[in-house]
Structures are given as structure tokens and as C-alpha cells.
Image (cartoon, rainbow, N blue to C red; front, side, top):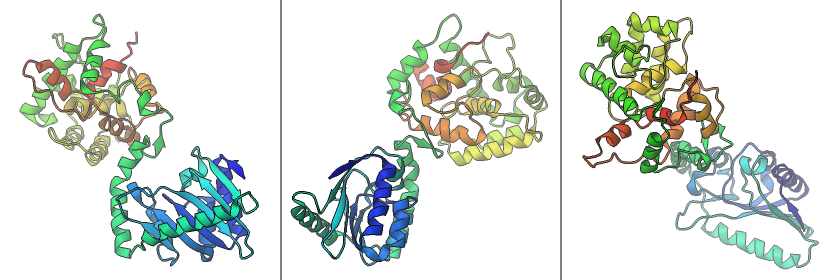
Length: 403
């Protein structure tokens, strides 16, 4: 009897046992392709005697189901009254020899390539092996009794539900846009906060000498009034466009450069001065009220880039405009908050048009405080305004003043 802990060793041992034995008895909570063991199983599928695979939480990959569903000795657990959670791999031959792996590892790519797993390797030479062998077979037989074959229609339905829930499942694993943060969301200073905690943080982290919560709220409120009254960015006056774009402090009491000063973006400055229609058209892709989704964002970026045929634009200026139109969905990512924000989120600082939504916004939307209800107390008008600008206000937490 041995203990195996490294996923690559578990994968290799499964391959070794498949090559050595002629009868495979497998019960696993979840399964996927893209491991050495999965490839070997496909090559040796004639040796599958009984294989039962769970589908709870849609963790089994549809590709595995499509590959093995037609095999008469492979069935799936579709009932939802309890969770099917075993991980047992029994291999035997006609001479009474057998070996078994039992432990934590599912028959998935993750379990067999990168997860922390532990498996017990038992053989027919171990003490008490005869009863162990019998008990394992009887248990797998009991699973087999309530397992089911999957029809083509059921596979299609499963695949559709799996696709719909994949993003949700990925986010629970802290995977966004295919990138897994090495930092748990629990370690973030903001993502797990309740609204009242987050609200205190955007107020309480502000140094009154350099920052002003009320000044930020005033900027968002004034710009929201512009969009509410005029709707279309190109219909704003030149001064208003420059205020929205963070290109000017006009001598008034409103500090327009909060949420990202763009005074150094010369080409952007020219485009705003000349009222480039592509910038206004891009902002039209983002609804002023209601939900904003990734498709809206992608259309915004596609149109926004048309204003910069030489490519002299970046996520800083784009996110400034997005944050001003929909501060409840977007934050201006610039040189004064990028480092601290990305560190807190546990992601690389190299955020561009393609990764901004997936790495920044998708994480924020999954945060606890973002999904909170708007404060209803009429005495908390400033808090309501902060809630309406809750994503843009992240800047108040991560802003780092640079001389």
C-alpha cells in the first residue's frame, strides 16, 4: 500500500495500470479530457468494464461525455437528490491480480495535472485485499444500478447548461478570461466587503488634504447630469467634453481630474477638441441606464479604436470615458491606481482593451458590495450617489498620489 500525492504521478500511475490490466472499474465524481490518463482510456476503451461518472454542478466536461456516452459500459449520474462524489480506479486481470487507486483525484485534467490530491494505491498483495476487492466491486455495482446512459438530446441539453454556467463556475475558482489569480479573493481588501464596509472604505481611506470624497461625488453627479440632459456625447459643449474626458480644471470648484487626469494624452486631447464622432458613437454603445454586459463593452472598444487609426490610445483614456458614463460598472484604470488595484486583485498590471473587462470588471461584478441594493434611507443622499458610482469610486481606495 502506498500514498501518491503529486498529480503527475497519479496521472502516470493510471496510465501504467491501464497498460497492465484488462478490466477497468472506475467511479468518479467528474471527468474531462486532456490528461494522459484520459488519452489512454480512449485508446483502451474496450477494457472498460464499468465506469460511472457524476455530473453534479456541471463539472464534468461535455467533451468527455460526447466521447464516452456511446460506450455500453459507461454510465452517468443524473439524479440530483444527493451528490455523487467517489474517486476510485480499480484494475484487474483474469488471474486474480488487481490494483486500485482511491482518494481525492477526479478523472479531470485539473486533478491529474495541477491540483493538490492524495491517493492510496492498494494491490492484491496487501493484507485483507480479498475483502477490499469485493467491497469495491460491490460499491461500484451499486453505483451502476442507478447510473444512466445519456442520449444525444440529453448531451445537448447538458452542454447548453454547462456553457451557460461555465463563467460562473470559473469565477468560483477565481478564473477570469482563462487566467487564474494566484491570490484568493478572500485576500482582497475590497472584493468580499459588504456595502456598508465598502462605503466606509471609500470614505475612510481618503486623506482630506489630498483627496475629497465629496469632490469625487460632485464630479460624477455633474457628468451624469450632462448625459441625462443631452444623451449624446457629441452634443456636449467642448468644455463639457473636456471635463468628462479629464482634460481640464476650468477654475471652477469642481475637480474634473479626479478619476484619472488625461492631460498628457495629446492625441486624445485633439480628438475631444475636434469632437471625433467615433468617440461619441462608442459611448452610445454603453446604455445610460440598466445592465451593461461584455458585448456592450466590446462594441464600445471596437468603435472607440476607429478614432485612433494610428493606435495611439489605451485603456486609460477609454476607461476614463466609460467610468464617467457608467460609474456603476467601470473604473478608470490609470497610472495612479493600476499598481495597487492589480496587486489587490492578484493580477498582472498589463491590462489592455482585451483583458480589462475579464480581469477587472468581471471580478468587480462578482464582488459582494457591487450586488448590494441601493440604500433607501432618504437621509443618505450622498451614500446613494456613492452607490450609483460605486465602481468608479474604487479609485478613492487605490489612488496613489504622484508628484
